[in-house]
Image 1: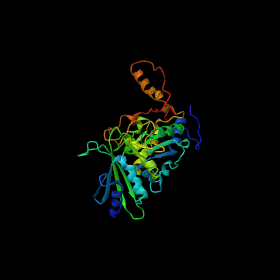
Image 2 (image 1 turned 90 degrees about the horizontal axis):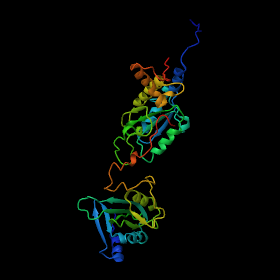
Image 3 (image 1 turned 30 degrees about the vertical axis):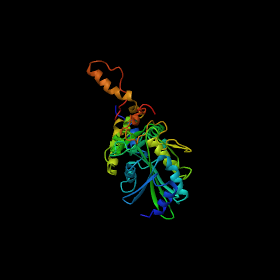
Length: 190
Length: 168
């Protein structure tokens, strides 16, 4: 059956539309603790202009952000603050670990510096460099946009770890010749 | 380097010659005193010799240091803002008696400096009005700038709960 669609109407899935909206309006929370923060500012400034990717609205309140950019080293006194800010951000939210220190502790292998924030909060993108150039951070934002478009769903099911495993589990069950016990609830690409 | 001979004469007449040791090295003028005398020497320097400004209070751990006899070396740097005289006063401390009178009654600015030394080395400044940790979290155990403290700590940097995607 063919349905007549006027020229000014486009059909898509709700998941695709939601992801498309989200990826083009990432509002960063600048968690800038060190020299990476200077590069983060340069990324936001006119020469590199992260506004081209819809991510120029740096908000200093976690309640208005959906992208946390951890730029710089995090010490053990700061980590509870980082976790609290992360929990205060509304879903859906993503995290970029910018630079060697945030990702691994970098050269600061001492008693007080956390050796990689991904031990304590979820991280979507890692940016290497000490500090990374703005181009690298922009590349991470572009890659994150791809990821959001690829995996995102309207209800945010991709954030539920259990639900993320369901397609894999269903595939395994099919390979074993079993009937999948539960159909995957994520997916739905346009 | 400003001449200190007048100050040294005054010190000699007040404390005698044996109780302190003066030396110069790379244009640093240094005075080593016994820990018991430290407060009275600093008080004398401030009230009689005009050293009205305390630049810094810090500490050195001489564990495993070549030729060192004492464990901790406390360092006070004082300045006479009128004459420009500068003097480094040092006192040595050994375990288990890591106590020295606080100089907060002389210079208010010593408050946070002494708290930092307490935080990092565990030196107890008796008479300090508010001796608690200043940089490290209150629940921190140990004194990390001591040479026998492991560089990578005792696991405190990873002693946090983990937040996953599902929560929050």
